[in-house]
Amino acid sequence: MNRNLLGRGLVILASILVAVILAYPPKEKINLGLDLQGGMHLVLQVHTEDAVRAEVDSDVDRLLATAKEKGWTGLTARRVGDAAFEVAGATEADRDAVTKVLTDSFRDYSLARGGNLRYEMKPDVVNRNRQLAVKQAVETIRNRVDAFGVAEPVIQEGSNNRVVVELPGVDDPERVRRLIKSTAFLEFRLVSYPQGGGGSGSREEILQHYNNQLPADVEIMEGDRIDRETRQVVGKEYYAVERRRVITGRDLKNARPSQGQFSQPVVQFTLTPGGAQAFGNATGANVGRGLGIVLDGRVVSAPRINSKITDSGIIEGNFTQQEVDDLSTVLRSGALPASLTYLEERTVGPSLGRDSIQQGLRAGIVGTSLVVVAMLLIYNLTGVNAVMALILNVLLLFGGMGALHSTLTLPGIAGVILTIGMAVDANVLVFERIREELRAGRTVRSAIDLGFQHAFTSIIDTHVTTIVSAMILFQFGTGPIKGFAVTLVIGLIASLFTAVFVSRWIFDLVLSRRRVQRLSI
Image (cartoon, rainbow, N blue to C red; front, side):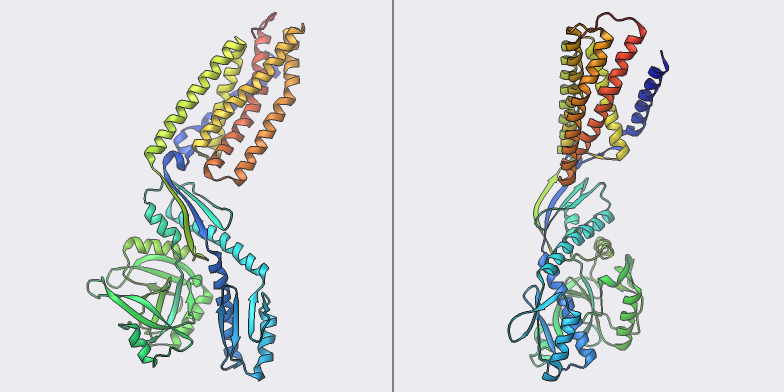
């Protein structure tokens, strides 16, 4: 055996060893997709108009803060529709200064036609905010799912402001739904009435306190009345809270489960430096007042401020331990920028997944057996060459999947079977060219050389075009389609190696051991 043949043989042997190491044990190296191990498939609609409204509300708050600093008494502003706000109450003396501030500092808006100071968000800014809302929703959902501990989740942006979520192996779908969809928008607001913490028994009592006319900077929010001894909900209570937010969930640095004074589950939080300063200023200046902790528009508690609070605190309510765990996760991952609607939900049971694996394996075994029989019947002993290359192709395929820790899906099993067909197709191209050369009177060695040489271009063309198609599927497809694309790409790369390199080495090995006058093909 010459050195060239020995070197190629060692390369093939090394490839086999590496593939076995990478693929074993398969249960640890190759993940099963949603359709094989069960789980959830969700399609969520992001209501991006919520994000646009929130941006306008934030700008309105910023304008009112500026008005207070500059002493523009009587000036009011409110959002009109989804993407506009209206300014009123500016005196003639202040009107020019207000307009200048709006023009210089609110450049995302343009002045609408009409007599009032109505400013509309520019169309390109609206589109930008909508796109950012979807991207932020994807990242927020991914953070929450990662904290939940789902292995190999698929979370990606779809068309028309949709998000596709696939969670293999999930055994508590209801908890996942709550975790994903919970907006968890946290606000800390000062309570205007009742003073000193605690809530009122009815809205009417609050309205009566304000002579049936709520101030413009106050609104009524609802909460649950908790029995101090049993910690159970015994009714509703209401709070008049300032519209201005002291801090929000965006100012949180961390949140984690903890225990309160009576060993009840609570959420302990720490604040960013900027949030701690704002929180300290507000609590220091309002000792004795109630501080409303508002979560998704409901007051979960309103403790009395006994002293200045700076960089940490707790959120308590009638929470269970699981609710505290989930709330901590949601607060750490950030609030969703907009509300979500479930457009589609599918739950795949693990028993259905096992049936899919069994049927897929059965189909693969039957298909491979038929291919092996066909190659042996059509190409006689030369068919053994194709069978050996085919076995190595499948081994390299699973080795590649193990190296990438890729996910095997039901379409992925179809990709394996298709790869087997493509690998055999490459051998068929070579063998048919060898047959043509033998019919033309070539010697065995010359026929093999010319057969590989002439078939090489066709093999490259078919494999490269299919790989490009598979990469497009991977880029734009969802979980199962990605699984098909991954197995197909890895299998085709392995097919190029086995059909050209390995198959040729087997022919050369046979020819090197004896003088062959006739080829069994």
